[in-house]
Length: 276
Image 1 (cartoon, rainbow, N blue to C red):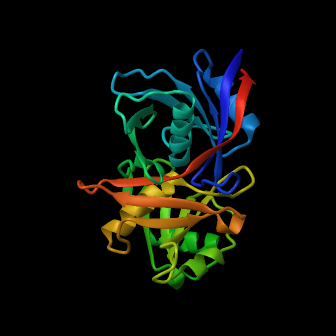
Image 2: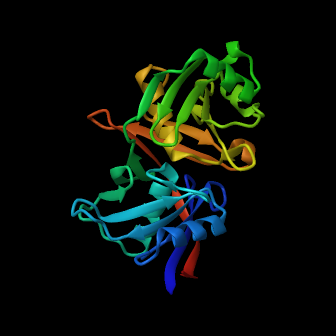
């Protein structure tokens, strides 16, 4: 069966500078096995499938797959899927707010002058990282224990351990080894720089480790940590993907109720039909 398809570059307005996402629209009738097979074939970090919502409170439902498994939530698939759904003619019940249903529940996405932004989901785990694990993280990153300024659990689904280094240059210099952890690393730029932080995301893979170019879920959890500890003030812009030759830009803001919103641009690079 021929189905509408988009490949979207997320957290950029310049094609091929962000994080790509495959989106299958009108995915009714596909089995989990068929979705997983297609996601494995695309060989992208995530592939999403848009379905009718199961609740009247949502505008659409999405299932999110990596090449090997399904995720309850992920940030760049949320923004990319919403971009593709709107571009394909989706009409939200509210003019400037879209409600996405996913495995993690309902996620609000809003339209802003800088693109779409999603409301950061609550952390599933936060707080102190046990010292033996801190030592393991330092070894994976190839840094001395004393170079880690701070470290906390910042898990909103993928299992992130968040690490703060002294500055952006220290983050850019990392050449990590194999890992079985999902490690997010952040370092501040000097005052007056175009971006507040440099962010990198390292995840386990079949080959031992992969770096995600631009990561919405990590930026959402790190933002909550940095804002809570007074190390950042909103709004700010984080850079990610620099070492990989990308130019991802993640915009973090808060609203009157101090909810954290994570957003950025998105651009469709491929549009057409796919046989599924």
